[in-house]
Image: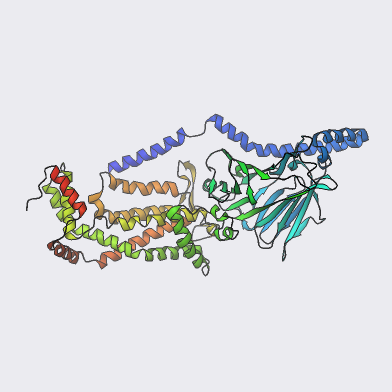
Length: 618
């Protein structure tokens, strides 16, 4: 590498470090983020304090006697009306589980308290729990007839079954929880689980609530909030794919930014709202549609335990009638394309495969091949190797044509050098016209070496989208990589390099070295058509990608490394297959033929004549 390249690389590193320092959070921002992180502990302390107060109140009630009890009941009656009796009770938990997922339900709020996925573990081998604890919220908010504001999240439901643990094996089973306003008036939550299914049916029934809930309510607010725990080794990479995603009713999906605090009001109908992580999601799905929603996502400063706090307030239809029912569903499970697609509500969009042609390639080419190979091969390192070979074999004709075009240009290089000697640099148009005339007579397309390579870029982008979100690679070992879905660290650094990280990924280094070798092999062919400084940029770009991809999926960098190695091997094979002396003779034979000028060449000649150029002397 020459002096200019070294200076350029040093400048780039300097710019990256300056950028990192400039955009480092201010002290005020750090304090705000720290306060947000501590909110979890505050919630837990608050709950403990509430529990202590409840214990103290219980003791006081025993000492004070019936008069104190009466005062408390009167205060609750004034605040909650018909729901006063549901404000005081001891909490209890009911679990319902099948072979895939275990849901713990809390009598307080009748809400999902935790969701555990049985077939998956975290980076530290603990079970994958999508959410857990009293920091979660789920409940209806509405006004009663006497204009009292009711939040079911704070009230106690009564389970109909005495069993506290339900295991779903062969047939569906349910948990029914009721929030009583009167003996015959209640709100009912029914959770129904089927065997071997991540989707839980959830129905809200209103029985004789038309005299309790305000008549002018034609919609109710459903609030759902949770803290999202870290699940993967690379929290920075995981955070990139952790965000709220939602699907418009009979329309496409959208998402909130994963890199900042966001609050957004959605005024249109929605089909579902997903609290999404890199490989897992908690989703609420409408039976028909939600009216509108407010979504909010907040980042945590310390991502060792929690990545984000999600919350949403959803407007759902309500009709004042003796009985009214709202069908909903929950999905607590993996972001696996095949699993999500079977529900036919667009949940497969939680696996981001790109857009336009990249989406088409992933959906109809890469995924089918990947799943086919996975049907009889269990080692994902071998699957990626075979996938790479299949893609390279399919692209072999294009690659051969590209190399052949480069070889033609290589043998013509002495003649192009002769043209450049005859025509000075300041007459660039005349040089270009003479060069194009030579290519035309020789039957060489100067873009023939570039276009086939450009057609391969969508496949590279498709892999860039596919591998970091492929749950199939999660926790899969190959060679030194313990998890192909995240980075393969061979050395932990005692410091953090901006934009690089605190570790060294071997597959990323191999990818970078093989890219530079591949570029070096093809440099001679394309050197004549490079702009000044492009040669140096060819080597700087792989180094920049090394910084970017160091924390990415090892499966991705492994694929890029394999693709580079196969390309190098193909070039060596083509070099033996193509005899450049015979190729030059064939080009001379083509030059002897009378070739009709192309419209492009005619335009170049016209432009040159307008500038006073009369052609080369023979």
